[in-house]
Image 1 (cartoon, rainbow, N blue to C red):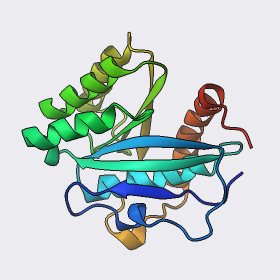
Image 2: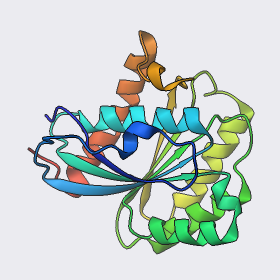
Image 3: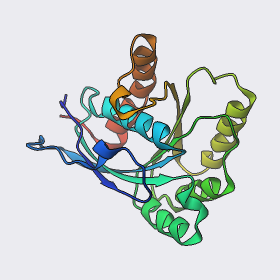
Image 4: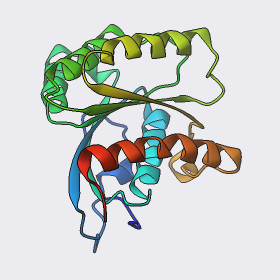
Length: 201
């Protein structure tokens, strides 16, 4: 088991979670470097993505160095930035989509996901993190059904996640049942990474 996860983040539009761009001093050696594209709705959902990746990095036998590239929903509305994000997506194994789940997916986000799935040359993981308590919402069900259809023939596995959304940088830690639920959901991704990436210590 590793004790911490190191991030190298590319900033595309402020604000973004600051700590994701700070390399850790004296970081441990990692068996595998894994690139992750985080596409988030706003700052709170970006912070939640950071929480989930932290938990994933601490899973037993997951010895990974995450290289994180950040894009917001708003930035993808710009055609040039969308093109740049598409270039970033070509290199990543995990696409992490973090949103609240109250609204349908914007067209420009769907297009980026389609491009990423179509460009996959092997297995991949689409992690979708939504606000807790929305598991049975009609909008959430429609989002997940849409994404399942997109990845069906692309060799990509879909991993839904529901968790609390932090409201400030100092409130990244969840407590009680939220942490337990988040840990259970995150643990579903770990066996997939061990099998496909050989992430064993």
